[in-house]
Image (cartoon, rainbow, N blue to C red; front, top):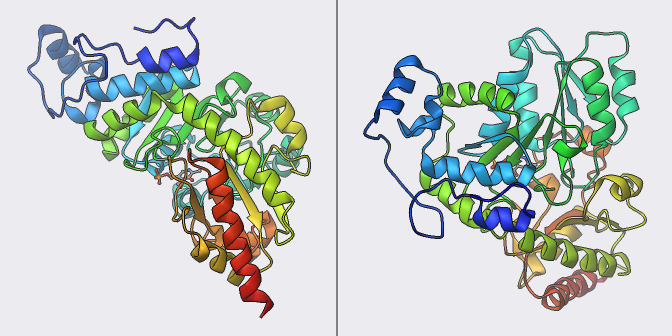
Length: 399
Ligand code: PLP
């Protein structure tokens, strides 16, 4: 078992160690049901703490609990829970924690699936939605004004796709002054670039499909927070059945053990590529917290540990963006992020495809915007590929 005083790198390598087996890596146990010892039988019969025993797969098993323990180690939380997808984690958290009849404050420009869920599901359950700019808590204060106070303040940090840093310290202070919870989708920060719980957030949510797993071979979600909050989310998860499969949990545990190495490398390479793109004549604008021009630069200095492995940049039209993605030879033109491989996508045509043009304009997602999730390949090889694609776009659009 990894001691809490040890560094994150050590805790992620050894922190699964609730296992009693002799192997040094986590165990994959695929059983959906288990022989009940006296303690497990008693817990099941009284419905108290049965999720801490191997009883039935939907409540969690040793394999899923060991992987969840690594997420708790990553975020420095009392408890963590894994899901079949990031959307499972997001929907379960909102359903569990939004108090009936209260508004829910959701930052502008969140991931398209989250936006679809809050806009499609929450109003029907009696929640009004308050939109706000997560980099400016005063914007949220002004929008709430003298009206009813939200029970949940929800934001992403770093944001998708413009990498804006949410002012988590400011939002936590404001949310707590109303008795509200601050929930942060930290998929892009991955417990590495920004540490939401240390900045005052109550619950961290992840699409663990991305950096946490890091190998583009599992769909998963996670939440981390206090035992009291996570157990409320657990109830919804077990009723809606959005629990993770043991094989997915085992892959997450495998991936998590190398997260700090992967993320630091991805962040460093993204910083190099951001600087090279910023100096390129075909590129109108680059978004990465390492750049002095980034809108969240001041917050990046106080609330980020590192700038992160995703960046975006603008070409002058949607047609140029598409031609660029098609001209790449090494980087994959594909949705998703956080894997070992560099992935390139066009937000208006992928993660944010469900939004209206007015919404895209409002949150600054232009048609020529391209997002790069930087992998762990050699940085010079990546730049050579990006540069040759930019040259081909230049030739195609000057004809
Ligand atoms: N949150 C963010 C920021 C995302 O980018 C995504 C997916 O791209 C999700 C949540 C949803 O995660 P999943 O696809 O694992 O359900």
